Image (cartoon, rainbow, N blue to C red; front, top):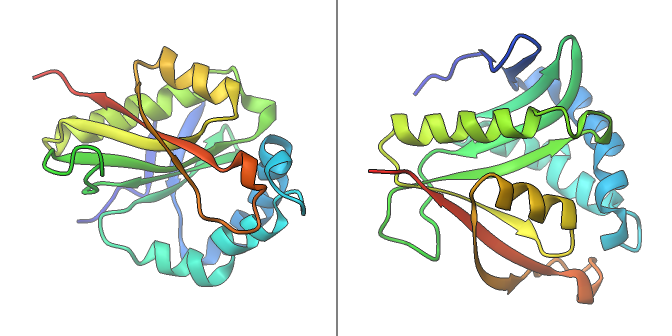
Length: 185
């Protein structure tokens, strides 16, 4: 399936489908926006995570994954975040239910509170409905109070807790939850 190269979410906010030539800009963005929010999870302040998840090898593999559009989020002309969906990803908690996963969403601290996250969730819901999915889900840390509050405000329900297996992360901070939202029939 071909995905739109640009999606307008509002007068100011657009999604741009990530291309291979965007890797340098993508990695630089993540080196800037990941540590302020998540450095507390890592002895190296998140450098290993950013390189492992957003370095060239994984980046190019994820770009080549069918049914997983990867976007850069722009506010006007400014690159302010990333957003990746998995259009056909069953939730482990509801394996028989047609589902869409929000795989990645990161926004720069400077744009938090401006409604961009809500626009991204609305777009994901729209895509889920368009594809006949009844469940929209994602995984979130259980230590980030702002994120927890945001997803609850967006109508997501907390699922059961689980633990990440990333060895370099502080053991006591590996707690996660799947959260989900059901489309109305």
